[in-house]
Length: 413
Image (tube, rainbow, N blue to C red; front, side, top):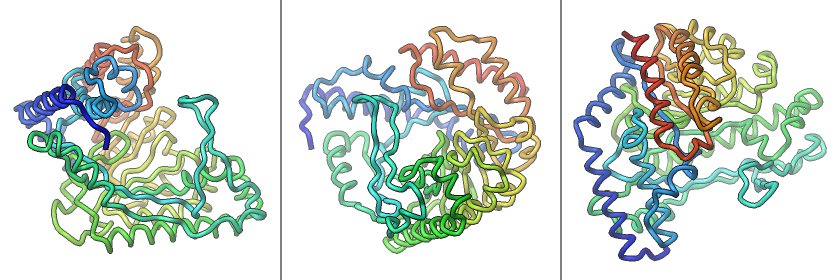
C-alpha cells in the first residue's frame, strides 16, 4: 500500500473525527428515523431526497483537498464524499460512524474479457469492443461465466485504512445487494443492434444464450451462499440507484443467509428499444428467475418502466422500489403505485442542475411539482443522478435541494 505522510495522516484523522461527530448529532438521529419510517411504508413518512455526488465529485472535491501524497488525497476524497451531502447540500444522505468497504468479487459473463475503447485518454465517453457479432457464427465463443470472491483483497484494504483511522473511524466490510443485469452483460460483449437482431434472426439461440447466462448467475449466487459471505442488507446499506435498503421485511442479523434474505436490484436499460411483447418473450422469463432469488427487489435505471409495468413488473411480489426515469410516464406510474408498498423512485432530469451556471428556479419548481403531483398517494424518493458538472458550486447544489424540498413540503402539507 502507498505511504501517507504524517502531515496527510493528521489531515485525514481530523476529517475522520469530524465525520464521527456528524454521525452522532441529534439531526442525524432524526434523519435515521425518517428513513426507517420511509422504509416501513409508514403512512406519515415524508418524501426522501438524495443527490448522488459521485458523478460530479471531480467538479467539486479536488478544490477542497489538502493532502499532498496521492494515497492521502484518495482517502481524503473518500472522507469528504462521506460528509459533503450533509454539510453542504442539505439532502437526506446519512453520515456513518464507519467507512464501508466492498467485498471483492467478480463475474465475467461467458468468460469473455470486457474491452473498452475511449476516444481520448481519460475521457468519460467509451464504447465496448464487441466479441460477439453474428450470434450463430460466434456462439462457440460463449463459455461458462467466470466468477468468484476474494475476501483477502478486501481485508488488506480494510487493514490499511484501519491502521490510519481505525481508532477513530473504523473500516468495515459492507453488506452488498445482489445484482446481475443480463442485458448489461450482453451489451458488454456485443453491440446493442446485434443483440436486437439476434432475437429476430436466431430466437432459439438467443434463448439458449440467456438461459446459459441466467444459470451462471444462479451458480454465482449459490457460491456466495455456500461461502457464507452474505450479510443483512437493511438500513443504511447501499441499494444502488442512489437509494438505501431501509426495510422491516428482511433479517437484520444472522449467519447462513440466503439471497432470498437480501435486497436485489435489476434493470434493463439496454432493452428500452424493445416492444413490451418482445421484452416479455425474450427477457422476462430470465429476469423473473433472477428476481425470484431476491428477498426484496428494486427495479430500473434510466429506462422508462411504464411499458412493461402491467405485463411484467406488476407481477413481481417482492418489488419494493421502482425507478421513474426522466423518460417515464410519471402520471401512469403514479396511478399504478398509488397506495402500494412500492417506492416511486423518481430520477429528475439532470439538465436542471447540470446545464448552465445559474439555476432556472421556475423550471425546476415546475418539474418537481409535476413529480410530486403525479406521485400523490405514493411513497416518494427523489434521487438526482447522472450529473457531471455543477459549475464547481456547492451552493448551486444546496439551492437545488432547497427547491426540491420546498416542493415536497408544500404538497405534503
